[in-house]
Length: 278
Ligand SMILES: Nc1ncnc2c1ncn2[C@@H]1O[C@H](COP(=O)(O)OP(=O)(O)OP(=O)(O)O)[C@@H](O)[C@H]1O
Image (tube, rainbow, N blue to C red; front, side):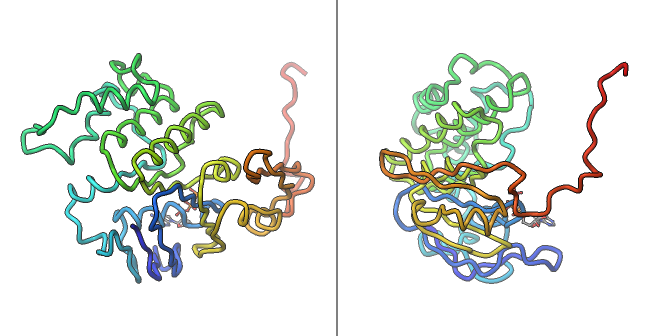
């Protein structure tokens, strides 16, 4: 169980997370949505213990998150950071194996052989054939899948994902969230994901938490949260909401920029390229 109690974060005298209170007590998929700069990543940093609240607290199983030793915390909670893994020379397999650090002794030894877990994570993320390739020779999407495989082998009960579908094409976005969703159900985990794509958030999350200007704007089931009014008020965009046949999940259909509710770019700033040679 993870709880935020009146939690705030100020950076350079500006409040980026403002008095957020919520509880994720049951296993499930929880989505954090909201526009750029709303404070989603900052909230996730507070929840992972990477940032200290200016006021209020984050409790993990009833205890302040800052009080957990690093390895104990890593056995409970895994974090997929925005941007994923850097393009370095380690192989995919070695990188994924690094996810086991919380279970290793001083000399990198483990009580049980982690090989089956590593191989299962590689296979679930479709990385078996790429396992010996260094990260700096992978595409952004492949590195993102390696990052998820790394936190899978960490075997957490709570998983925090910051924009896990960045760099992925729509097929892999669906496949990644499908894998996370199945894994969440199998293990009874709490998965908290910052997602920009409202349709994916709606398809895969049990509950959504909407942030705007650092504050909690709305929360609830996708069906109650994803509305035309939300898209207008929070994103200043114009959209229709339709519902899928199976389960009545809301999906938004955008209208083009001509109907944007924000000030469009001034036309004198839009310059069209002249064809070369004219
Ligand atoms: N280290 C920092 N120093 C100064 N300001 C910061 C820092 N980190 C975040 N901010 C500011 O805090 C606000 C919230 O940022 P945050 O990254 O949490 O938003 P977000 O909702 O995750 O945005 P995005 O969707 O663009 O990733 C922004 O205005 C950002 O500029």
